[in-house]
Length: 31
Image (cartoon, rainbow, N blue to C red; front, side, top):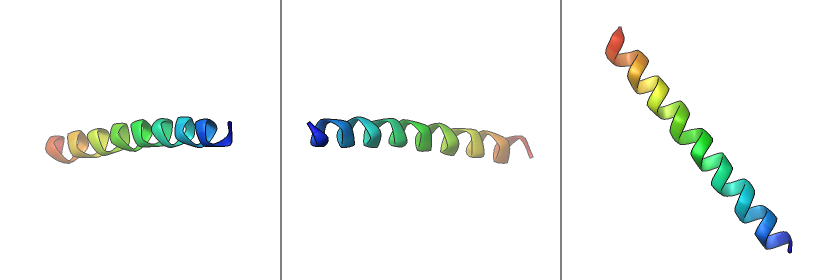
């Protein structure tokens, strides 16, 4: 049970991190 919750949080965190990286790269290209 806990493992499933941790896996869910990890996947959400990774998605969030990827979106931040994409946004940073996009902003860097605009600059």
